[in-house]
Image: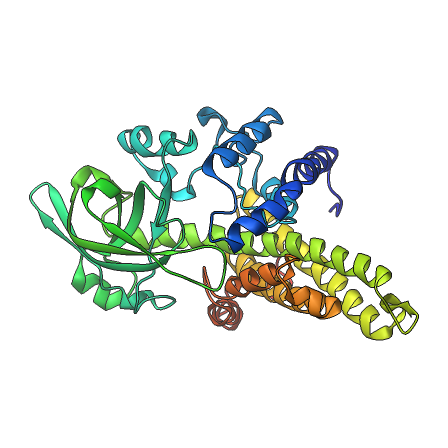
Length: 391
């Protein structure tokens, strides 16, 4: 057991850190200004330019298999990369990637959807959540009814990330009512549905700077060849998509919290009250210490979840722990840092209030705190996971 990064991992970490410092952080004032004016933080043209710059460093398709032109660096490296790019709020992501479940497509689907997505020619989204079915997937109501060589989809999805920009959606719908009614999981199928097949998206305004979408399907016809995976096997694909997204939330929280903590340290040494830096006050020192400890705890939960996945092992329990603790840690740290900055932290001149609004979402999407606690406790109570098992 070796609790240190390898030379290769350190090199990747330093390269990404340099990219963030030189290419992304200088854009922060512009992003804040654009967002205050109701504009996108950065334009699609600028995002494409940044992705091509990153590609020159070798960062293209970090987890994309080499056969599709990716770097295939693995989950541990993905965690390290996410921790670094999350030290800025500039809305950037590396190019050359696609949703993990899209790789389950057949040759036709890979040619039409997977490869164009990897190349950046198409954008996708995944849709499972409904107005009455968030954590409770048993309550899914969207249906797909077979009609000759097509399926007719009717229903709504909500809070779909990327739904306003997507060219196609991977959507879950009931294809066997009796089977779904009996188990609450089976009897649903995943369909790849192009926007021009007829579904519509509606922007949902939130307290954050991103806008999820509501998707509406009204007698949308989808050809049989657009079924992703097996008929009635969509729930498993949904779990795999969500499972990956969970520990990623923890990684983002670590990166954000590190940057915020450094801001608090720097500010507390500069800001003076009653003739001395506020850093001399115990009331400032303790939240800084607590934040540092919690960041390290979250980091190792995330890295363990990623490492376990790299070993080909089931990491769902660890992913839930990484998300639960990481998301809550991020919320605590941003709150402390805002408090340390006082009134300035509450203004839009600094990005703290922006991160404050963004971090609050982490405890909700891809499985709420309550769902993560239910999963973790259920695994332990049923004996599916033993205490200290992941050492």
